[in-house]
Length: 408
Ligand SMILES: [Fe+2]
Ligand SMILES: [Fe+2]
Image 1 (cartoon, helix red, strand yellow):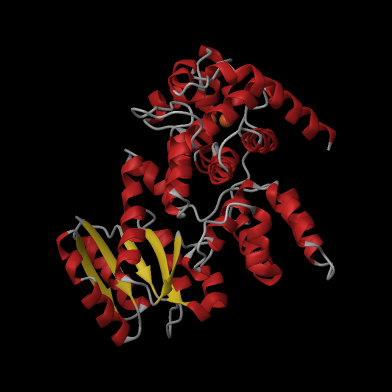
Image 2 (tube, helix red, strand yellow; image 1 turned 30 degrees about the vertical axis):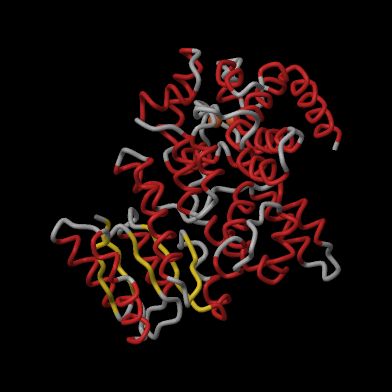
């Protein structure tokens, strides 16, 4: 049974939620607070009894403490709780302030099914990580570490009043953190788009430059809170290059367009967990990298023994919290150890991600962390999907993609 705390200053809204969610009483233990202060008191009372809320769902605009300030406190004091903003469509501006502290954004009014699904999915991802301590680490993260260089470029480009969408998209695409946050935002309920937006170009168009500016600004603000500790054996630049190469290879694989589109996103984000580890558990991550080198074993194998989880699961967990689509989250989660279901044939999102990562590592070796295991590709898995014979052609394509990237 999951316990959820709802916060809204309007009694009508709270009563409405209470009525609407009554059928979920069997699966959720629900509490309702009329202000940020009341919510904090309830969180504290719960903690004193040794209990914890799994999720806090809050309104944005409230007198006294607003939703963003409340979630900031929740992040600092109860980092394991999932933080969701539920706010009116016209409060987009206000909701921006919650960007660095909220995992998900839902628009009011929200139909009960949608609300239940979003909360269920978010709390469901808690099962991905076995260890409570690790979950707290991931819960404390509002964004991924990003390359300062890219962000600086973006802020600079946005100062030009005649800047073109393509220019902005090209800059954003190089940054895993901002790309992920942007896709999260554009795909959130605020924009209620009929289709999932997977391209940065489309996202820039939907968001508009003003919103994008705020997005970047909030990312920048949060970045100042980043510990800037170097991790021996790990390079952000290399990971960025590896992710970009994998994404480009994914784009060149033959599958129906929506599958490739999701595959490109998954390939770009597949090693997100490494960013999380480098930023939040630098010491443990460094030990795992060293052991991987010394024992000539893949990093994920070492991570499993040393930490009980892997960068694949940590990345998937975070992306899941952010509301990225299941196919992407699943592909990120299993990119090292793909499993084919009975009757699966051809390239799906997981297969694209696995192949793109494997080939990127093979042709470049820039995924230095995983390099000791030359041959990351699971040939038996690919054979089951009837794809193994096509590898030589894809390998050639991957080499060409690398050459093109280096030429740019
Ligand atoms: Fe990986
Ligand atoms: Fe990788």
